[in-house]
Length: 125
Image (cartoon, rainbow, N blue to C red; front, side):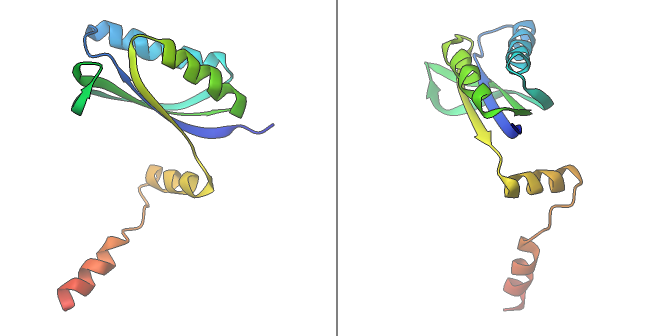
């Protein structure tokens, strides 16, 4: 079986201490590895204010992770995130071929600027 590429974004409860954020991130990393996932990148965005309250909280500690794993690994990972009291919300995205190409271009800083042509047309009018 081939592994799929995933993006996992999750929000950690903001009432934790700074050191507890690191422990929570490491716990999710270990969870992914335990289920056969290979982590490519973990990007901690830090505390961000919510547009609306979630569980009576006005902000949360955002983390974005990219990893590869087998499809059957996602259900137990999401189940563990769902029952973890420190995780307020999570979203797992499975990348298709188009999303993978875009990610590769982003990493090379070679994403085409498709809006530049439209702006030039608007200026000419």
